[in-house]
Image (cartoon, rainbow, N blue to C red; front, side, top):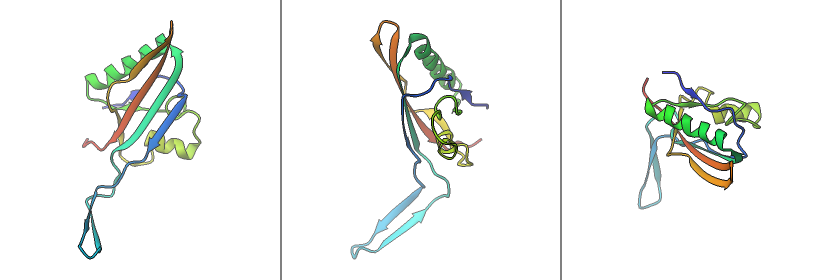
Length: 134
């Protein structure tokens, strides 16, 4: 299943967390720790994008993207022209999860739209990186 491209909008702010590795830590009463690792791939990476003062038409394109992705249990893809815009090449690879991580971006809930002024809105989107069997 091919990912749905995110609208070509540049975020005004962005927050990213690379996720974690599947592991469990056990600690004995004497303080000794043992870690059991269950895999070698990250999961649960987070990406939050905010689009301040965009047109209502652009806000609607984000909502349409949300519907298109979730209607068929699909994923979102980003390029240097949208969610990864403004980041250097090496950082953009992480933001896009294109460096062989196996993670795919899914919406982590519906986009939040706030009206700023007639015809202008601010939209916040949260995404989570998931490992899905293909």
